[in-house]
Image 1 (cartoon, rainbow, N blue to C red):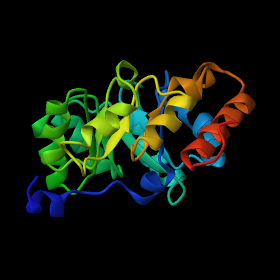
Image 2: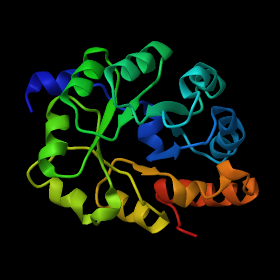
Image 3: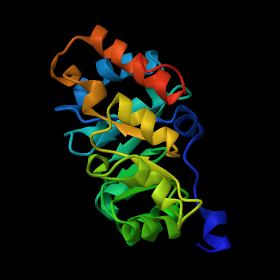
Length: 220
């Protein structure tokens, strides 16, 4: 990594960085976001990744960003093309996430000053994105490795910022953070059936536990 790359690396937004928890909201319809995100944010979540696998996400995005402005970052996930990336930039997304290792996506985002978190699993994939100026790298699918992988990566890459994603439950969140991850990306283990009409009170209880763990508090 050159000094020039380090200096130009867009940083994760403050709310995301301080909260250390990104909730991946993969809904069936964009109209379902508000009722679930209201509970998440009220319970202390400071960063939500809305995904492009949900129809209507781009159309709903500006309203979501405004609704939670100053309280939670609303990033865009599952970005896999430069057209999608440009739409996220135009909408004012505070960060974007991609499941792939793509030099073009990273370089385009960095040139625009937009923090990007690209996915990868091998050291080669992760360092390729990090060296091009990614804000952090997403270890995906994290369920295929242990939390100790974060420590292993910092051997050859001491300054790399890791965010595990995919199969991270409550115990996993604690383990990854203790191993040096800068944040954890969580979906199903926290959301459960919330987007399928599930109990929002139960969602709040799960959310509070995750927020506490990511803040360094108790697991139960």
